Structures are given as C-alpha cells and as structure tokens.
Length: 312
Image (cartoon, rainbow, N blue to C red; front, side, top):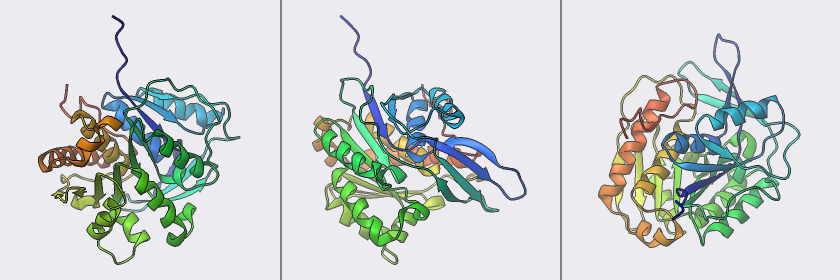
C-alpha cells in the first residue's frame, strides 16, 4: 500500500524582507511577512506547509525562499509575480516594540503548483487580505476552500498601509465571517473599535460564524472565547524581551498546530471545533503563550521548534 502524505496547511499571504532599524545600530535585513512567519512556525513544529505568496526573482526573493526552505516551508510556484520582492522597514524603539513602513505590491498568481489533496487548514491575514488587487483574490480563495478546509485568520493590521479603521473594518468583518478561527491582538481591536472592550468585540465576531476567537493581550497573555460561550484567560510567561517582532505570528502558528493536534482541523471537523471544550482551549493557549514568549526572548521573528519546546 502506498503511504499517504501527511495532512498539510496552506498559508496564503505576503512574504517579504524586513529591514530592522534599531536605535544606535545599522540596518539588518531579515525575511519576514506575517503569513510567511506563521508558515515557518508551523514548519518548525513539524507540520507539512505550503505557502502561496508573491515573490520576485531577485536577491531579496532568493533570501526569503532560502529562509522558508530552512524551516521546511514549500513555496508554491506561480505563473506570475512582482517586479521586486516586497520590503518592510521595522523601526524598533528602546523597548524593542516595532512600527513599520512598507514598499510593496500584493497579488496572487493566476495558477500555482499546489497538489490535489485538500489542506486541513487554510490560513491568511495581515497585508494580503487588505491590499488591492490581491486582497479580493484572497477572499475568493477562502470562500472557495471552506468546503474542504478549516479557515483561520489573523487581521494583524498595518495602519500605515490600510487607510482608516472605517475603510478596513468591512474587510476584516467579511473575513471573520468566512473564518472558523480568528486570532487578533488587543491593539488591532483598539484601532478598529476605540474604547470598546476586546471581549465585547470577540463576542460580536463569534456571532458572525467562527468557532473560536482569541485575543492576544501582549505581556498580559491571551483571552479565548468559544462559540459555546466559554471564556479562557491565560497568562504570558515572564521573559526578558529582546523585541516583539513576529510574536503574534508565532502565537498564531502554535494555535493552528494545537488545534491540529486536538484533531479539530478539516472541514469534516467543523462541528467538533464549534463544540471545543474549555480544557482543550486552555491547553492550546498555554502552549501558544510559551511559543510566543520564546519568540520575544530573541531577536526577530524566530519561532521555536518542537525540540526547543521539549516535544518529540
């Protein structure tokens, strides 16, 4: 009997080069992009993962591809790409917090080399979901994939690129309605809905269709609310912070991985995901917080491997 390949994740979104600018130091170039970071996190946790992205055949594109391959991420080859690979400049303050400026375009190929097996999960978020013309193509892809896959979404907003909250909110809410799992930061929610409690927004989003909404609270941990009404709050481990680059993406990758390990991914598991119990949510979130803590303890978007977590 021919051995079947392991179930896979399909991550859709930007991969780019982060030029990190620290006070008193020269610029440093690192491959990045929120969806690409999520894909790397999954690859390092032992998952089979494909990335559908928008890279040029240039030096920056080669840097990104090499970095992704080093974490077992398969970049899907498409029939077209940009003239140059996207670049984001991350300005770090004295505490290591990042603000961004961007030089990029975003679209999807018309055709790509993906296999025939349906992914267990399709993940997207951030720039790829908002910037035209690719944002609309991503939304169509998610709608097309719902019958075969769990859909996960992290808005991971970049106000410098996305216009006003009023312009961005309809895009976010459309994707929330397509998603089974949403992870969002309290900072993103404060930008979209100033003065509104994160838990209130999460409950509203759950009413639009997801089974689970998780709000990350920076150094204070994370809050998850389920479609069944459970609210689970976990604390973040205390670590010395090098910087916060990629912390939310590492958390997102661990969230997908944890739900995968709990056998809650795949369109045929949608009902089970909606019935997720409190102990499972807590167990998954605690591990997500550990993964994010390791990431912030070292420079750049550098999520841990299973071995670093003490796992087989």
